[in-house]
Image (cartoon, rainbow, N blue to C red; front, top):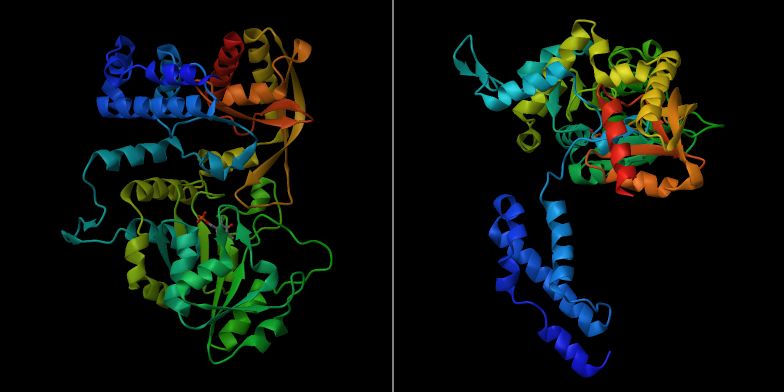
Length: 467
Ligand SMILES: *Cc1c(COP(=O)(O)O)cnc(C)c1O
């Protein structure tokens, strides 16, 4: 590019006034505001000016500027946090918002969001009540624990327990349980924030009762057991049974605590799984304090639960850090409604529980229904029902897959390719996140909610019509 041309291009950039004076901006100014629209143009023009200088941009026309600005407006002009179709077959998918709430739980959220409520008000006495009271009795009832407390999430629950019960003292943890959960929850880091001192015992694959006992000093406050969540060590392994751990702690007047991660109220056998304790099992084994998430296997909103001995929960309730971790009214409303389903034995009303326990035969029928719908609507596609492996997700049952069914999608001539298809489905009006196997896109039906089949069909149609 010659020097005069370069100068001419820069001079040719339209002035801001004429950019802002275009009719098509009336689509965006009402929702984004004139100032935001102006800032977007300024930034686009700056980028183009920079591009002309370094030779990466040649087109500095008004059309080119409008094209760039309009793609920013399209991105900014709609809700960023919005619903999508989860066709991955991973039930508790942390990136996709973990658990979907039951319809009744959603209604309780909108009721308290819209109105004043009994959040911290006791209707009997007319005096101040406690927000924790709405769910404490339910958690105690369902777990057999003496007392319970809820905070923002399970990470906060672990932090609060360690800070309130073991600050400046030692906490003994097996090396096999010093885990990192996806999304940056690391036991050693949480321990450091809490002010408790981590004492590691045993080896990665084997830790014995004597390892814990030999590490006890006058500074020791607690034995902590952590669910290894998203990984399994297999082969030559030993870990200490929770009952032994609880008893050893009791004999030395120490606290036993277990971070269960994905807490379960119903026995996993009822869900067709095996090998994981319920929250009640941990309490029955004598563990003093158990923590778990509300939005993993439990199927509620994001919340962290602490259940256990009344005296210890009492110390947590009066610990000042709790104020920074307290749960909001919408979360409490959703959680209370979810727990009441367990109380009434209506686990089947909780979407997460229902999806996990769905039988393969029912899933095959669901996949056949979806394939029929897609064949009818998208004639260019070849749809085949195939067996797939689904997952609980959320760090629970990492070694176990759930046998499920899905619909594999191919196109005649291989266009669009699987990569193109997956990416266009993500940017469809109603986004769809699908799985892939052997480079073929697969819609896992386990995680489809009522009405998702129609949304999926519509998004697939729109993707193909855009080509
Ligand atoms: C998931 C998990 C956590 C973190 O829980 P959040 O509710 O996401 O804060 C902590 N510990 C274990 C063992 C977990 O599985």
